[in-house]
Length: 402
Ligand SMILES: Cc1cc2nc3c(=O)[nH]c(=O)nc-3n(C[C@H](O)[C@H](O)[C@H](O)COP(=O)(O)OP(=O)(O)OC[C@H]3O[C@@H](n4cnc5c(N)ncnc54)[C@H](O)[C@@H]3O)c2cc1C
Image 1: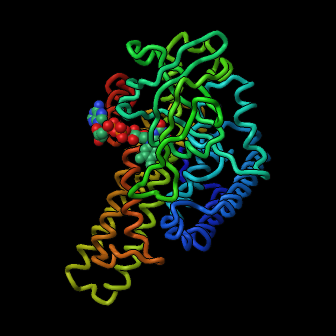
Image 2: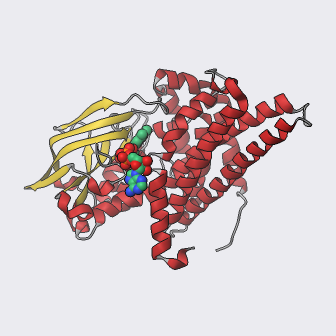
Image 3: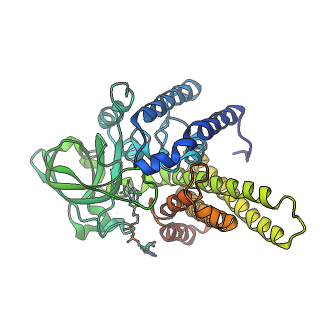
């Protein structure tokens, strides 16, 4: 495997195009989406069309591939696109029509029929926009994924699910949710099963839509399952695949695919804050290079820029490994842990460097918004602490892995 740091001309063009879209079209609307708690359907339609054309172009170049995000592209290309979209608006990548977080478990563990049925609906969104979602978290089972309590029991040719899921991105608007449940909590991970539950199934309902500090344009829903009966065909991968710990592995494999994407989103937001602060410093201190404060501030900016760059390289490595079909759990966790932390630091430093100006809410100055948006990037898809536990486990059990 050659070590290569440069982007291909096609990747550079992709990044430049997305950068233009983010700057001229997405960013100017970002604060109004945040205030209005959503992105207008018309704009999401435009994004769905863009997605279709990027997917078609990737298919032409490389043939059909199993990508992790909503874009049917290589993982690395998805990371490039995601960073730019998040630079434009932090919530937009989460709001994109498509299977979302629900895609990887269906692609990775679904039967051919399940893939056709559940992923096929996204091929044509000309009539209506569609989303998929991923429902793992419960009150009392966030980081402790093994502790889920939503129950599932087999009754004839059906499964009956009961429980509550919380904080589910796009859970209310989704055509289907991948819902994780347990046949017996005392079995721990071995008892887990994953189901695709379609909207409208009797016994499935949407609870509260959360009011959040940040990412306010993204929908975060509570889901309720009350004796929700689904046909046995909804069990992801079919019964035989659960002879081992497949249910839990389905949940975890999703994260190997999506943690680098979340890291790329964080880096996009962090970069936005860094660039704003850099512009502020250039404007305010350019004529005062002899002032000691300038060099102290320049040094802070240098640290922020360095850390974002390092996080990006680690994130690209995780996506690149996935594209090579190489296991990347440790690298995906490193990307997520580093990306979140570097971006949070970037947003905090940017506000401090700009002083009170950084705390004001203005259309052209989004530091306070990015500050609200970024914190959750160190929480969802596994908190920073959990990433470090994953990394340490891999390093301690596989001594050759570092
Ligand atoms: C905007 C948003 C969108 C989300 N989208 C989804 C979604 O689509 N699907 C979904 O299933 N979930 C989703 N979540 C839920 C998210 O994944 C969980 O919030 C996250 O896993 C953390 O769980 P928790 O909030 O219960 O925190 P807890 O697990 O209760 O953790 C609280 C604190 O304890 C620490 N901690 C916990 N265990 C350990 C340990 N063993 N060692 C050291 N420290 C520990 C954590 O790091 C954290 O600091 C979303 C959450 C948000 C806020």
